[in-house]
Image 1 (tube, rainbow, N blue to C red):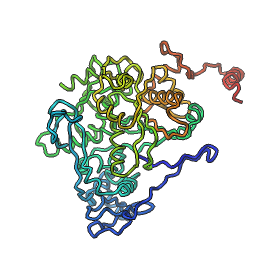
Image 2: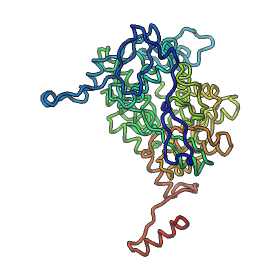
Image 3: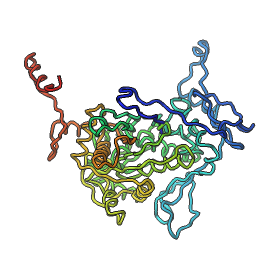
Length: 515
């Protein structure tokens, strides 16, 4: 999460984005550390992080890379891989006694209350056939103050020290605390920017002045799936180390983006990847990624739910709202779990309200929400431009309900026309959004019209993929080739003769009222 200062109004600073703010530390944070925690830390940071609590293990260390002399550089030139990994080996993070494990989700009413599994076990379901959830040793994490964790994570931003340059592994202690750096498979994912959607909020959303879009699509494979896939493949890489035989492969059912991420990370680790894709239901850009990465691609004549059946067999200031497009619904729960973990450990003081945005053609959670959570009804999802969330029987529906109830959350839907118009309108303000982001933005438009989200509410829309993956849908929209859709914001190219007068006539018509 990036820390956000107060956003100045256009009248105060029309073009200046907010400055970073710093959280204050307590007297206990600034006390002299005990001898056991007196390790010197060399950090590029305005001030050193506060010492760990008495009796706690020392902090992980981020070191500057030493500059070699010209003579040494000429005779013994080192590769980037040698430099990065040798530095991690020379300065390993001290053991902190942190751990994590699997627990059933939700706990079975009559099940074993002590049921848990090591993260090193290959297990997919609980003993009762339910889902599994990762739990961390919160007592061990809480030995360190919130200020300690904030400063430690801030100190790692922008580094190439392995593996902390990753937006995921810079928070390694909150992810897989026991994994060794040599087992991590990272493509330096994460750390994507927060885009201040100034013009979209001001001109099209009633003067909203604190609207942000988190561009998770600016990542190695073009979607937010990289953030989870680096963890999955790293854990697989860790598991195969003690095995006497190689892992045959890692498989997934996907609506597009997951397969792209899995294939890329498996390729980086040298692990075979197998992906099950619904035939003719994903974009060409999504299909070419696993093919190019050498994955075994099985195109099935079914939808995502059918694939799943086969495969079974912000500177630390919390926004007021986070809007997330939802299909299989793992992401909405992941946001809740991350915010709640940070709240419990003192990094933030509250959890934002969550909004799950669904395409109207695949909206089982929306129906469940509108019924007052009376009964969940799976559905056969209809085709949608937001193909990755075309899921009628989501696996993580129970998790999503927990997240939404805990945050006083909302579920909203968007029709095909609403999502495409919202996407195209956002593009006109400088973005290049994907259809999933269009679903989330359409939900935002509705919640603003209903006065649920206020003008000054700090709101973050999560953009889960890059618009370049969906060029054909954008082309069809701007060519007005989508059946039964007005394409309100279409902007087709204009054919004109190579003649000065003809060009001027077109420009006068297009720019009428703008000059």
